[in-house]
Amino acid sequence: MPETTNLDVVIVGAGFSGLYMMHKMRGLGFSARVYEAGSGVGGTWYWNRYPGARVDIESQEYSYSFSPELEDEWVWSERYAAQPELLKYLNHVADRFDLRRDIQFETRITAAVFDEASGRWTVSTNTGEVISARFCVMAIGCLSVTKDVDLPGAETYLGHAYHTGHWPHEGVDFTGQSVGVIGTGSSAIQSIPQIAKQAAHLTVFQRTPNFSVPAHNGPADPEIAARWKANRAELREQARRSAGGFLSMDTSEALAVEATPEERQQTFEARWAQGGFCMGAAFADITVDLTANAYAVEFVAGKIREIVKDPEVAEKLIPKTYPFGTKRLCVDTGYHATYNRPNVTLVDLKETPIETITPTGLRTSAKDYAFDSIVYAIGFDAMTGPLGRIDIRGRGGMALRDKWTAGPRTYLGLMSAGFPNLFMVTGPGSPSVLSNMVTSIEQHVDWISDCVTWLTNHQQGVIEATVEAEDAWVDHVNETANTTLYVKANSWYLGANIPGKPRVFLPYVGGVGVYRVKCEEVAAKGYEGFALSPATA
Image (cartoon, rainbow, N blue to C red; front, side):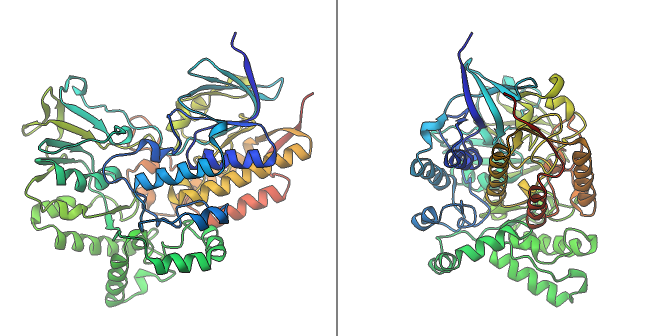
């Protein structure tokens, strides 16, 4: 039998969440260790190295706020940091706080089983190691399990095949190649302009067009950096209390339905020129009122028609089946203009669906295509996928994936009834992917750290969400989502991209600030909605 490692806390994942969680646990005096499947830190920025991979929130906001010294010493080079710089930043954090000595790389957690007698988790790895821990923290990210390629014939393809979520670390040179990209989601919208610059010819296969707005990326503005540094504490606190967890969204309280056509046009133009997610916050009613949303759709459609020279291609690129912003709004650099290149072709899969991948390329209902390389930009099994990959078993041997057959059930997105002492960072039922992830990660890690400390100081061994609190929170998450237009799109927010996945709105749309207040109130009331029990001998 393998020797058992005893810890206070097992942390799964070494991305933004896992690194900060380790730093907090060590500072509080708990024995903890991070287990990471990759060979380095970085999480999503370790795995996603596809061409053009870049953050879609301004760099100074998409960063840790827990250390003023860290913020003072790190200088971002671009308005929106690219993957190599983000990975460099996270490696700097790991080194600066000496975190690597408590991270075990190339080790995947395969199972976690709760022992009711001891009140501890038995955690197993793919290397045969067994860990006994009082607490288990799933810091595995919301977009860390890629969607499988489910196209017939994929295994017969003889060329080079790549998935944007598993990009070769050494990079890929498409120079002189005929390349096919399947998908037009966020990773495709970022990578297509870069691949087009190299490939002899690029064919993009689009099933559903996505709304995308310009980033207007460039070198970091020294004036913005100076203003941010001078007012950082105040600005960070404002972000924590905002709807999205970041201030560059520039949320407006004005209503599109009450504005004149001239006012709407002027506002949209200003937002488009500013770039980034602020376009989605131009008016307060865009995400809740179809009439207001239609104004945004009309404006963006007009921009696409201005940019794309071929009217037929432009029309194919304009989303017409769901409201603006109800799928993840993409932020791009030259995406629509790429279709003006003579070496780029767009294929509408609604008109001519893919029938099979072939040894030389793929076949649609209209013709055969030959490619040197195929890029699958087909996305992720979001939010629940990473947890479902691990065999997590709580009270009575209940498997988490079985409990969640009809959709995830959590209290605050932090815990699930029947799974004591198991915490989720930015889990389903929390703002997570509808927010600045770093803001939400820090809030969750701080809450979990305070909770673990409180339990220890009060001689409590086990904390568990009650079924009643969980049911009420799930109802609240669903009711809040149903007041918005998000539920009118077949998006990965609803699990619609994964065949057989239950159609449930996964994140909490009520806003980061509102959610934070709720979490603070729960803790202030002695962890209301949670059942507590004393530590065993």
